[in-house]
Length: 446
Image 1 (tube, rainbow, N blue to C red):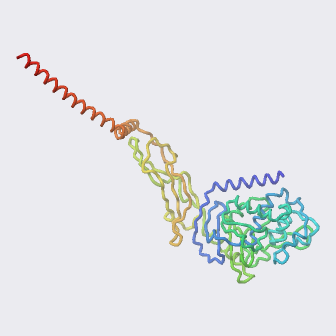
Image 2: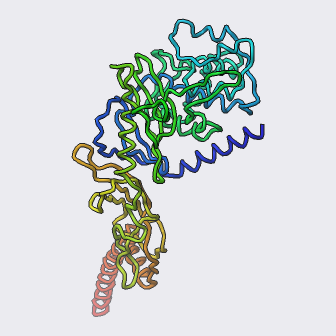
């Protein structure tokens, strides 16, 4: 139990830390003529998407489904090696007539197999038999309940166009995903116990078996892979049905860079030709040789300036990015390939503290005519220096504000009106007094 809790804790921490890394999406021109209808390539070090082709279109995932099956098992089994599952014929019979890819689970009917052996049987030779046995076990004898857990997990991981109908990937019109969603599922699975090890295994012996399980992923099989073998490939899962075509999720790693590739719907023209593996190798060669991590914006380099009011001898301040921005860009990129658009006020008032957030900037890779500018990241813009407020200018601004205010104008207008009324009344009173004095003099003379 402690092992499982620790593993889940590590997984959560990994996801949280990954969520703090801005996951930008820039679709660079790879020059690769893809055989797959949907493709997605993500740099795993930064979370940045570097290539996306119809990555949000719904596709049938075939046996890449088993990545999610692995997740549900891993989250519900404490000890893979010591948890034993009884192999029941009625569960295996579900697959009769389906033409399923199988491991050697049927040889153990009436016996038990460890969850670890079943996971290897499911992920290495893509055994549907192992998938349904695990689903039945974790689902408490109810495979549908297990599938419900798969769908709930997909929703939890933020998948927007995914729905599972089974744990093995057999074709069902209501069983679909996208390259983008499958990448989310895979990135989470990579944080779980044994996943990387199992999915990167080319040959495995189940306890009690005389012959090995052999991977369906020729990219990682140096002995059987032939021209498909790619020395920098790591795992993860293949999938094939007539409706789904060839599917593949794999990673390529070299020189400190790691890329995840998701390739879906490579139509099956020749059963012995795996276009997804060709695509993956070509994309990895491109990404590993033509892209690199580089600084595209510096916290030391001003982006723009803003007018500052109420400061003596200082009428503007330069704004810089709150942090350095690093991104995966082409190795031949130049500063001219970066476009920065700012969102800042026309003016601000002193005092301004160094590092104070004033606005935002969005950094784009200007791209080519086909793709146009593409967002790399949005960052806060902060003041590059501290600017104090002038007391005299502040007082004058208050007075100016008072003078310009509506209530002040109303008061002055009222005073003027009252003054006019006073003058008029005074004039009338003065005239009456004058007439009264004249009348008195006349009377006295009389």
